[in-house]
Image 1 (tube, rainbow, N blue to C red):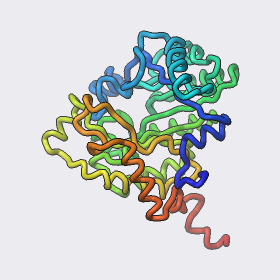
Image 2 (cartoon, rainbow, N blue to C red; image 1 turned 60 degrees about the vertical axis):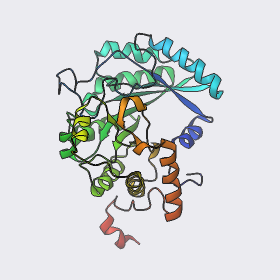
Image 3 (cartoon, one colour; image 1 turned 90 degrees about the vertical axis):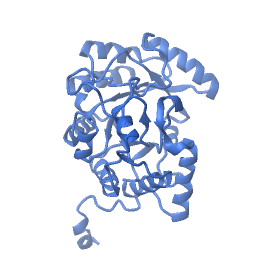
Image 4 (cartoon, one colour; image 1 turned 120 degrees about the horizontal axis):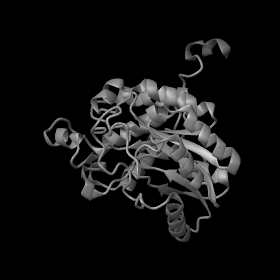
Length: 317
């Protein structure tokens, strides 16, 4: 961990690629099966109409052009030479297989060392993974898959209308790992119907499945969503950002030290939300997490003692 108390994504990338690597977001004109009637019509109750694309270029631009423009801007700003093409918004495997093959191949450009595909657990299929494997082999490009889980609590998944259960995530994880791709899971640690036990179980299940990376999010209350209606009507209280800091540290303590931490907290534009990061900046919360871990003298994996038959280990000393 290079002296840090958790396995930071920036350190992982630098070790893997020999220098700093930056993501280039790619925005496709697609939707989600939880919106078009396949498994739901209104999406998750916390998800806004623009998905995750707060900073993306317009989806009517070609994949090649989006990568060119983003690489030019980020390359100049950070003096970057290597990039990850990040298919970010909505569900990037929810399209005809030939279309998926076309856009993934279009991303295989010079200076692209990795292609990251964000999708849902119920949209990961062997045929689409075969396409990614072909691109990996043909262009010598690394592949990673990101998928939203949000929580392992199946009752909360139903309550937020995710449209899938924990079983679909387990199936997706096993399939992605079979192909040798890195798998990143997204979690919202402060969903109002989850408690500390759910936080710990999140860490345990990701560790047991061999998930490679994780992105943590603080719940945003996005305007004009069902979650916003519940929040405005007093359906739940978000607590304080100290509660979030405590949950993140607990999660990290139970998480395998081998799991890369892509993000401890996200960010959202103020004009889109009723609530975001407890009214303070994301970096202040991150700094609070770092400071509290230092104060407690704790670290990622400190309590990860539950794998490989915990109860018989005493006989093996």
